[in-house]
Structures are given as structure tokens and as C-alpha cells.
Image (tube, rainbow, N blue to C red; front, side, top):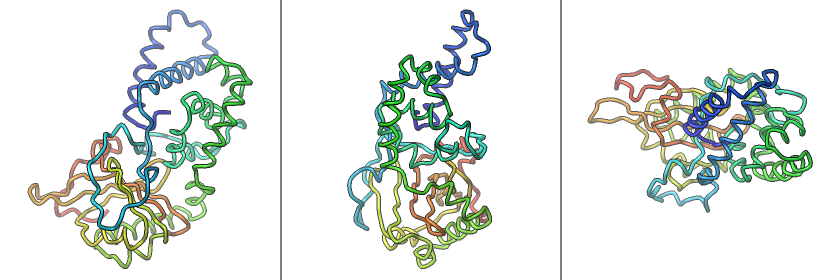
Length: 303
């Protein structure tokens, strides 16, 4: 709903506080889950009334020229933020016959970014129906509205999201490749960056690959444009997963500290065996969410 782990934490705290205050009046213990979800949904809707829509850089204008300066970073509150798979604790498959999206598909960057284009009420309906597997009647009860209103909002929400997400999800791509193949692709990608091997990196990128660096609005498209960054790379990387996708944590060498310092959490989107999208969140404050250190010793080995 909120596209930010920090906003989600705040919403969770508020949800529990509201539930604690209302607990003495609650009698339907057989409906505890539905009651808590209703409170959480209302908390998120209240939060969205006060906050601007989040997104990704590639939604803003045309790609930059190769020599373009990234410019001034915008507020973190403008951007969708990454989330660690380990915290999600999701299983593959559907939550119920009512669900349309696999749980891991529902945390992919493209899906989360598409949700931000929905009105808050439509966003809530889509998540309740197509991710959590609520029936139309249950969703209507959660939102204090009618079944007809839920069905209408769901149709509009599905249409908007379908226009903005890839035809093939990252989950489908990752499953078709298999864990070992995905691991090999990510290791090769990281190795090319660490060695500054432009030729090797170009070979791994899709022809129309994109690269962005939130909170900077600027983004780039094209193998050669993106690979040029590798020639200046002085980094170490840790491979991981975020938003149900392959990812890595990038640490840049800081001569003054004589160490590699946390710089970016990069989420990768694959197209077959090629890397199609690289979203490098230049937000070191998300590293603790992934259990990552703020820096690595200079003599650290590749990971």
C-alpha cells in the first residue's frame, strides 16, 4: 500500500495502537484477522491522504544522454523503496482461490510502482482481492462499501496495473532459469562491475537495458551508455534478494576511511539470461533492513 518499508513500519505501529485502544470493545474473536486487516487498511488510507505518490525514475521523462549529470537528489519520500525477501517470509503459490497474483509477484518493483498510480481506495481493493484473496463481500466489509463498488474499483485497478507491468513477471523468469542459473548470472554481473570489465558487462545487458539511481531523477538506457559506468567502478558487492528479485548491495571504496562504504541497494530485473533493468537505490539507510553492515574492510573478499 505505502511502497516504503519505513512507512509500513509506522503504519504497523499505528495499527497495533488502534487495535489496543479498541480491544476492550472487540467481541468477534472468530473474526480477529479481518478486524486487524480493516484497521491496517484504514491506517494506510489515512497515511496516503497526507503523502505524495511514490514512483521510479524511469517514469519521469526521457532517458538521459551518456554524459548527463544525475542532478540533485529528490526527497526519499518520492520513491518506491526496496524491501528484503527475508522479512517478507512469503511462500510460493496463491493465498486463496480468489487471489490473482502470486504473493512474490505482488512485491516486485514493477507491480509496486504500478500500484502507486491507483487511487488509494482502488489500491486497497486490488490488494485485498487479488493478493490477499479476499472475496468481494469481505473486501466490501473491510472498506465499508458495497460489493458493486468493490467490483467496479477492481476492474479499473486491474486495467491500470495491467497497462504498466511487464507481460512476464520476474517470478516466472526466475523459475524458468532456476536458482543455479540465476546465481551464475548475478555472480557474473557482479564480477564484471568489480573488475570494471565493460565488454563483459555489455554482453550481459539487454539491448534496451535501463539504469536508474533513486533518489536521483535521471536515468539511462542502452548497453554502451550503462557499461561506461563500469569503467569507473571501485566497488565491492554482496548478492541478495529484494522485492522477490535478484539484487545486490554495492559498497564504494572510501580512501579516507580505508574501507568500502555502503552506497546503493540495486534490484535487478532479468529478461531471459540478460539484465533488463537496474534500479540502484542510493539509500544506505535501507541497508540495516537487509542485515547489511554500513561498511566493509578494504581487504574484503568478493561476495
